[in-house]
Image (cartoon, one colour):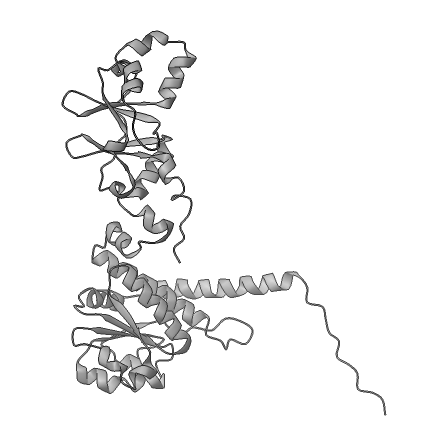
Length: 340
């Protein structure tokens, strides 16, 4: 009796993983494009309902949909919509008590037939809480019970066997982001409010106000513009780190110009030693770029980068200096966005 022939194992070419990965990403990208085109007035109604919610948006889902729900909860919370995540299993054992009559429930389930969610429906109906469902079909049991149903449409999962939730959860994630951000726009959520919710990391610092990180006027050099160049540098020493600029004001204390280390270097390079005995107004930079104390540091980074300057006077509403932003104080903060 002859031995059974062994199957031949073909080598997995190095390019094939890349081909497969690209196919998966392209498959999901196509699904997102289809989802975007199928959004209709129901999405707009859901935005209005969530934006008008006087309580908390309670997000719920099981398994992979639950993980997407947790991310959506975080996005809503950080963009001006109070939200919590409710585990459906825990809800069935008493945690449903966290839902109040002014709240709204946002349920995620691709099939719309998730048993744990369906068992919550009678209680939610009795509580008269609005229910927004994100599911593949409005004809599912979850879709039929919801106040509004945003349909994902049929989602063929990615990969060779198409078993693991991939395309469907990607669609949920994108739709959740769209919902949260459009609601945020409807509420006129501002960068200042966003900064309030993100106090840590470089992103939080970029979104803080100028007055929080500027050098106060007591710690920078300010001189009357009729003072000679020599006297400005002799008489106007300041404590702490020296800034590379002197802010010049008129007799009323209004900013008229700025004189920087670069201006001083140019005088020396051109051997204009006589200028040291002349009023600094003759060699200062008139009408320099300025910023208000309530502006965000994000605007500072933009101005410093676009105009290639190192110092930015901070003025009050009347035009009087209240501080100075020096590029050395903020250069590290603008290096990255570490939001997680």
